[in-house]
Image (tube, rainbow, N blue to C red; front, side):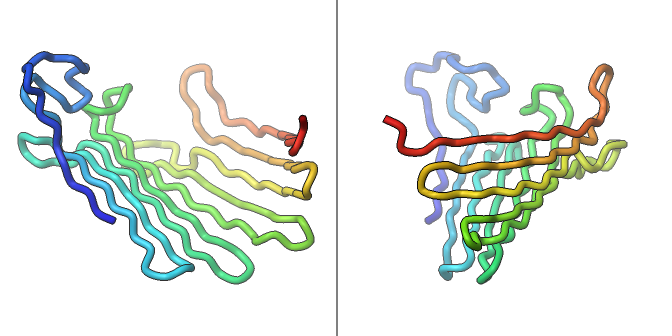
Length: 169
């Protein structure tokens, strides 16, 4: 599935903020793709291009590869400095590996990395999750380590125990 489009305002009113990619005439170009060539692989993405110079404003891409015992996921996000809240270009890569359930148990590992070349922090977060799931309850134990440092934010480690009850009511 592939989509490419643009919206045009007939009333020429400014409704959204200028950074949203719409001015009084038309929006930026947007696109979307969803690609599943085989049952064990899928890729998807969406992008926004400037209608003036066709430069990439926003890009989000992701994909999965499924193996018999585990699944590998990956994604990349890019925001041009005019689209981010901080006014700086954002480029991050996330990836993870999740085991398929074995006797109601699964394990997962994931990382998020900053790809911005001038950033001192490249590893933003790392997590490990152990999960048990049955017909009544899903129990997850997570360990998350952040690496981001900014003013009052410091790298830290979180431990999370999550209980999700099913079929209540």
